[in-house]
Image 1 (tube, rainbow, N blue to C red):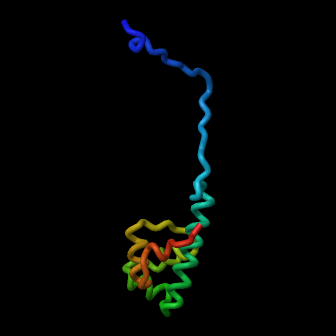
Image 2: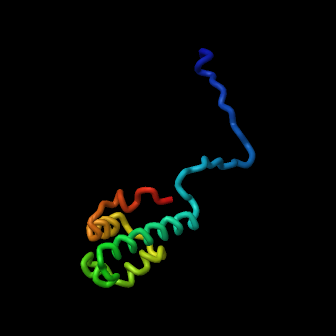
Length: 102
Protein backbone atom coordinates (compact mmCIF):
# COMPACT_ATOMS: atom_id res chain seq x y z
CA UNK A 1 0.00 0.00 0.00
CA UNK A 2 1.10 3.52 -0.66
CA UNK A 3 1.46 6.25 1.96
CA UNK A 4 -1.75 7.90 0.82
CA UNK A 5 -3.68 4.72 1.59
CA UNK A 6 -2.50 4.83 5.23
CA UNK A 7 -3.83 8.22 6.27
CA UNK A 8 -4.06 8.83 9.97
CA UNK A 9 -7.35 9.64 11.58
CA UNK A 10 -7.28 11.71 14.72
CA UNK A 11 -9.90 10.77 17.27
CA UNK A 12 -10.81 13.37 19.85
CA UNK A 13 -12.13 12.08 23.11
CA UNK A 14 -13.62 13.99 25.99
CA UNK A 15 -16.43 16.50 26.33
CA UNK A 16 -17.41 18.51 23.30
CA UNK A 17 -17.81 22.23 23.72
CA UNK A 18 -20.21 24.03 21.44
CA UNK A 19 -18.97 27.42 20.32
CA UNK A 20 -21.50 29.97 19.19
CA UNK A 21 -20.67 32.96 17.11
CA UNK A 22 -22.25 36.15 18.27
CA UNK A 23 -25.10 37.00 15.98
CA UNK A 24 -26.59 40.37 15.16
CA UNK A 25 -30.05 38.83 15.60
CA UNK A 26 -31.33 37.98 19.06
CA UNK A 27 -31.21 34.27 19.76
CA UNK A 28 -32.96 34.36 23.11
CA UNK A 29 -36.66 34.31 23.75
CA UNK A 30 -36.30 37.70 25.45
CA UNK A 31 -34.73 39.17 22.32
CA UNK A 32 -37.53 37.84 20.15
CA UNK A 33 -40.14 39.26 22.53
CA UNK A 34 -38.51 42.67 22.24
CA UNK A 35 -38.68 42.45 18.44
CA UNK A 36 -42.36 41.52 18.66
CA UNK A 37 -43.01 44.51 20.95
CA UNK A 38 -41.17 46.88 18.63
CA UNK A 39 -43.09 45.57 15.63
CA UNK A 40 -46.37 45.83 17.54
CA UNK A 41 -45.69 49.45 18.45
CA UNK A 42 -44.88 50.21 14.82
CA UNK A 43 -48.09 48.56 13.60
CA UNK A 44 -50.20 50.40 16.20
CA UNK A 45 -48.63 53.76 15.29
CA UNK A 46 -49.21 53.20 11.57
CA UNK A 47 -52.79 52.00 12.18
CA UNK A 48 -53.59 55.13 14.20
CA UNK A 49 -52.02 57.35 11.53
CA UNK A 50 -54.37 55.74 9.01
CA UNK A 51 -57.34 56.46 11.29
CA UNK A 52 -58.34 52.87 12.01
CA UNK A 53 -59.62 51.54 15.29
CA UNK A 54 -58.12 48.23 16.24
CA UNK A 55 -61.42 46.52 15.51
CA UNK A 56 -62.00 48.18 12.14
CA UNK A 57 -58.45 47.42 11.04
CA UNK A 58 -58.73 43.78 12.11
CA UNK A 59 -62.03 43.48 10.22
CA UNK A 60 -60.50 44.97 7.09
CA UNK A 61 -57.62 42.48 7.25
CA UNK A 62 -59.85 39.51 8.05
CA UNK A 63 -58.21 38.99 11.44
CA UNK A 64 -59.71 38.81 14.91
CA UNK A 65 -59.52 42.00 16.99
CA UNK A 66 -58.12 40.08 19.98
CA UNK A 67 -55.34 38.75 17.77
CA UNK A 68 -54.48 42.26 16.56
CA UNK A 69 -54.44 43.53 20.13
CA UNK A 70 -52.02 40.79 21.12
CA UNK A 71 -49.82 41.58 18.09
CA UNK A 72 -49.73 45.29 18.97
CA UNK A 73 -48.79 44.47 22.58
CA UNK A 74 -46.00 42.17 21.37
CA UNK A 75 -47.65 39.11 22.89
CA UNK A 76 -48.45 37.31 19.63
CA UNK A 77 -46.06 36.20 16.94
CA UNK A 78 -47.20 36.48 13.32
CA UNK A 79 -46.57 34.25 10.36
CA UNK A 80 -45.10 35.81 7.24
CA UNK A 81 -48.49 35.47 5.58
CA UNK A 82 -50.19 37.42 8.40
CA UNK A 83 -47.43 40.04 8.36
CA UNK A 84 -48.06 40.52 4.64
CA UNK A 85 -51.81 40.92 5.25
CA UNK A 86 -51.17 43.51 7.96
CA UNK A 87 -48.63 45.38 5.82
CA UNK A 88 -51.07 45.57 2.90
CA UNK A 89 -53.82 46.74 5.23
CA UNK A 90 -51.53 49.54 6.40
CA UNK A 91 -50.59 50.47 2.84
CA UNK A 92 -46.95 49.52 3.26
CA UNK A 93 -44.61 46.58 2.72
CA UNK A 94 -43.30 43.92 5.06
CA UNK A 95 -39.81 45.27 4.50
CA UNK A 96 -40.78 48.75 5.68
CA UNK A 97 -42.54 47.37 8.76
CA UNK A 98 -39.45 45.33 9.70
CA UNK A 99 -36.80 47.84 8.67
CA UNK A 100 -34.56 48.95 11.54
CA UNK A 101 -36.10 46.72 14.21
CA UNK A 102 -33.79 45.09 16.68
